[in-house]
Length: 427
Image (tube, rainbow, N blue to C red; front, side, top):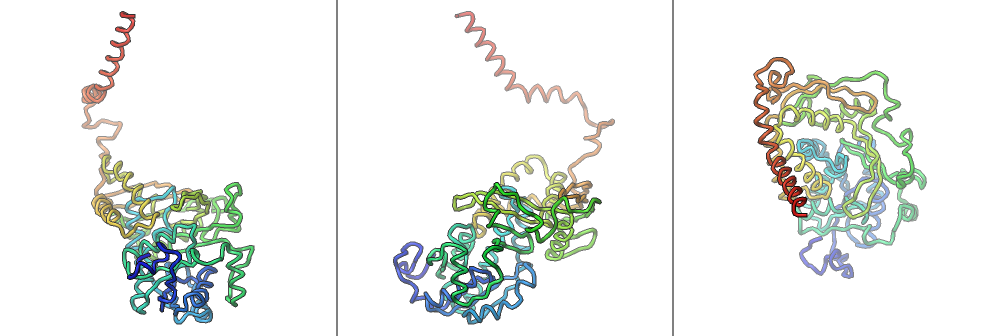
């Protein structure tokens, strides 16, 4: 956290008391357990005005029902709702998809949603003349880093308040106790409080029985975006996706903007049991964490994009891009979206995507996504050259190629043989 006065930095100097210097804070607010109790806690401990800011990232209209009333009743002066769905897709999801970035098979749904939320938080703070922003991320998670690195990049003068790193609350049970003591209404109970994060791209589930990797997930109880593969239809579905320079632009021939395209694929993928992963991942803070992710539409898009690249990218570019994809995923996962390296990698990725244009037809069946047809005006596949039938390919050319390609191995083998024979002679 960076402020105008280093003595007020609670991150670097936890014994200082900056609370009297914060007059207005903007809180990233979802109406969930943690952010709900933060409003009264901020007023009690900082004595500051609290503005709530909720971001619409596609979690569904039901999440906003009664949200303003709840925020105001708990002590907030106002609630802003920022609709950033289009920005999320255009500026964050599509670049990540084009890069082919995956973090340990996780398609980064929470990771790339945090920077635009934090950006919206900063925008409200500027509008309101606030001197601090606040979030409900725990000290164990990755999201605290994603929020705060974005704040450092976009508004280094704003103080950042992270109550989970300050208060005496140590568990969700403690948080529920605090909520009940302060008459904060809750939608969860002590036995049904899975920790969930939902946006247009995915839904994550953590906590309760999922904390132990020895427990098999009860998908009938957990899943919300679709069904388990065994419950999917016995008849396959087919879908055709059209891409222009790596960006999906049409579904079954109908041009669609990003948000409705992802929504339709979510419905189609969910119905076919697509995009469910049970993952023990390596968190940025050092521990391993188990969670279940639902990413139906995203899984279809990644499969289609990967398949089209096999047609349109040359070997050296495709192989090097795999290295870039891993580095890109690390940056996104670690909250370094607004970093010079991520911007530089985007330039490379965009160059590779100039020819990633075409159509991919996919078969969806009980959790599987199978590309069955690829076409592109930039295809590097030469049917005549690759055919087993008669072609222009001269098989005799392979002799010289193999001799030169294998020359280092041949020389090394000859040297080893000579050395072995020399050893026997002098032995």
